Length: 196
Image 1 (cartoon, rainbow, N blue to C red):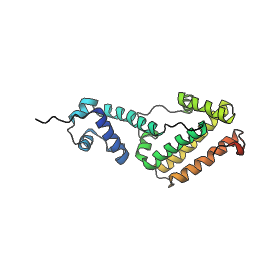
Image 2 (cartoon, helix red, strand yellow):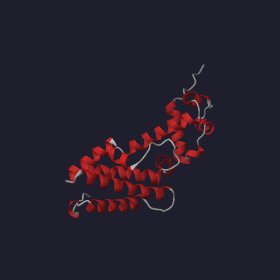
Image 3 (tube, rainbow, N blue to C red):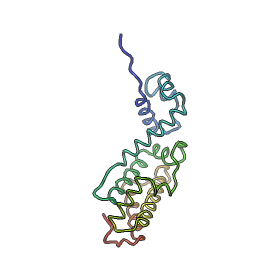
Image 4 (cartoon, helix red, strand yellow):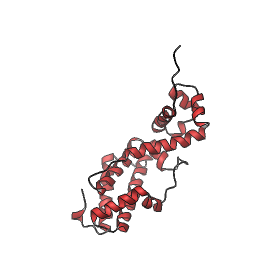
């Protein structure tokens, strides 16, 4: 007798993420997800108890997926920050449903975001130190540069992900890079010292 295929948590979460990216968060419920996987609802309920459990796990799975896209160490801190920004913009352009879920109001499961947390998070605090060292800036100024650039990039990405404006990924990166250069000059970095 043939053995049944085991429907694992990872299979379920991968299918839910695929649905989220393709059709949006509102398309996901236990029945539609079971249909997507090609199984009964039983494995989903067994792993997650209910829709609330699935949504909570999906939020974490989606955050991990997006964060993995944004992990790279560049030659220097400014290059690393630019790579993270580019990956963020790519999500807004290529996976707008995911962007809306993670960074806009569609996801009540997102972690609290505020400007203080943005600057004091361990990863960003380390990036600020590296930017400050690389550019010869006080950490407070490097922090303002990071914060202002994140806010500007988030604004542009939100406008694109919500179809308020149409811009290619390349056009968005040009706008963000120009703003980032201006933010560095506001913090006292001469134009000829701004990394390209």
